[in-house]
Length: 164
Image (cartoon, rainbow, N blue to C red; front, side):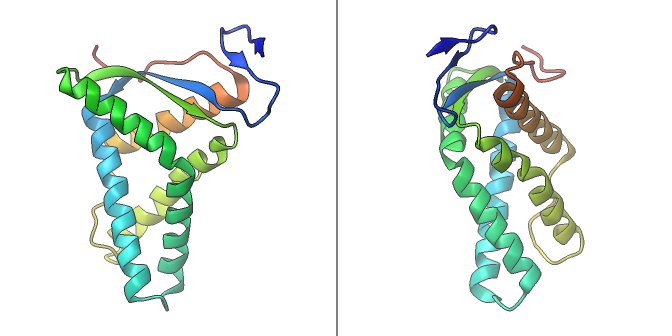
C-alpha cells in the first residue's frame, strides 16, 4: 500500500475500496434525499409489476434498480452514520464511505435518473413528487465529491453553506 500526497492510502488494486469523506453534510436533507430515492424505487417497482408493457417506465425501473444495487452498500453506511449523528442531536456531520473507483459511474448515473424520474412526475405519469431543490443540490454535491475524491484524489470539500 502506498501513501498518496493527500494522506489517502492507495492500494495497488485498482478496484480497492477507498474512503470518500463527506464533510459538513446536512443530515435532515440527506434523510430527505434517501426517502425520495426510497419512494422513487418503490413506485418504479409497482410500475414494473403492473404495467410491463410501458417501455419507458420499464427502462426507468431497470436503471433505478441497477443503480440502487450499485450504491446499496454505501447508502446503508451513510444511513447508519446519519442516524447515529441524529441520535446525538446533531444536524450536520462529517461522514465517510468506502467506495470502489467503479462507484463513480454508478453515482454519476443518479443525476440523469433523477432527471428522468422528475420529468415523469411532472408529466403526471408518476405519483411521487419531484426531487426538491435542496435535495438536488445535495445530490449534485455528493456526486461531485465521489468523482473528485476517487478520480483525482482531491481533498474533501465541505457541503456549501452548511452550518456546523
